[in-house]
Amino acid sequence: MRRLFKIVVSVLMVAFVAIQFFQPEKNNMEMTATHLLNTENVPENIKTLLQNSCFDCHSNHTNYLWYHNIAPVSWMVNNHIVAGKKELNFSEWGNLEIVDKISALGDIYDETERKKMPLKEYTFMHKDAKLTDEQINTLCNWVEKTGTELMKSML
Image (cartoon, helix red, strand yellow):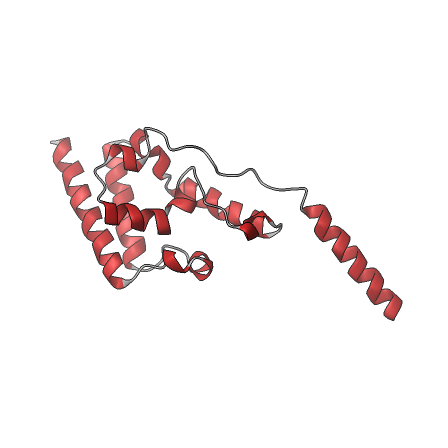
């Protein structure tokens, strides 16, 4: 029985080391001219909120922590990033049509107001990403203002 335990532990250790060689590509592109921060007038407090709570999964640049480099955590993080960018990529904001921007702002409002974003899995490990009620209110006010300005620009 003891020998079997040693074999199982050894196999698991070898497997753990082996999977470290299969890492997803990092999400580390530079900020481009199409990024939200380069195309919209974003106040500093909103910029900070977005950087702390949104950009890691919803832009082309993620700030990785040490444990993000350890499989299988690296795979889960990558899946969140791919899914987040599929829904909304702030790095591509300047490429969106005005109607799509207004729709995205509506989604941002809804998801943050209902406390669906940022994800609980993310805020568990990134305490500064968790939005307070005051921060949610501030972000939603900015989203409404920006959406109104975009709608006016369509007229």
